[in-house]
Image (cartoon, rainbow, N blue to C red; front, side, top):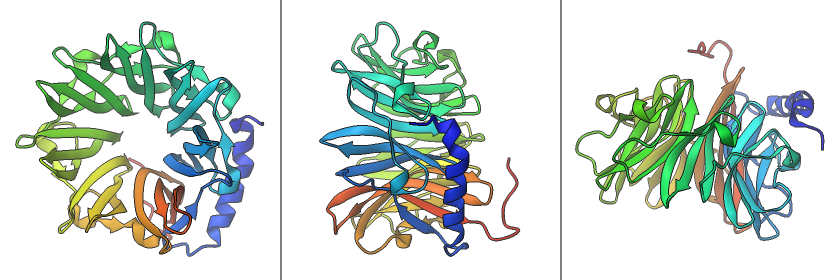
Length: 345
């Protein structure tokens, strides 16, 4: 298997040419489900590349795609019984692999043989859930307690982000020196923001809600949800609890936001019990139903990542195909009309 860095240029050209033949001003859905897999999930997009997992022979395998089912690359490392790629930045993927019965925080560079174990000394389990360039975030279980974790490419680089007084913490994403996730204090799960240390922790939990969590961060925006009882609302922050904005569209049962990039947010809105992959641009009224771009056999859909590169916007996720009876990795793609591409912040 060629290293990812050597293959990316040719594959990127192939994907872009293919996309150029579609209706350029509309969202186009691509089924990434690889042949032989029973389930699949595209967790993150980074340019023309997507990372996630596919269930093969009864076990999850960390996976990589370049815009088509046929481009699938199996990242499952030797000796691992299961693995999942949960995040991607450039040519690197972060996630987890179960080796010797232990869940290990993991880092790849485009091939199964590139796997690195990030699990810190003393941890019984660990997982990486976010990556930005050379920085990874996730959680490590130490003494039976989840600790929000930060790495810079090695197990020895581990930093404990758990603030004083917490009983559980996890970092979900990282971008531009900010880390986001959740911290539980006095039984309340609180949306959280860090800038590289436990002492830097900022509580983003807005007043009046019983729980909150942040899943994505980019350019000073954070996204996730707030909830009370059985209600959850997709949410947007800009660095403080007071900045909280609801993205929940009118009439929806529930919603949550998972990722943000360059002012656009993605996640899921549930309407009449049906999950719809969703896109926003900063307000509840801006909601776009990405589920409508899917063929009718897809009865549920989930958007998990957004990436804008050149003229294209990529949204990665998955849906349930009623014809195959399977969960299948999906990629939504849209080319911006001429003159409509906003500047990079």
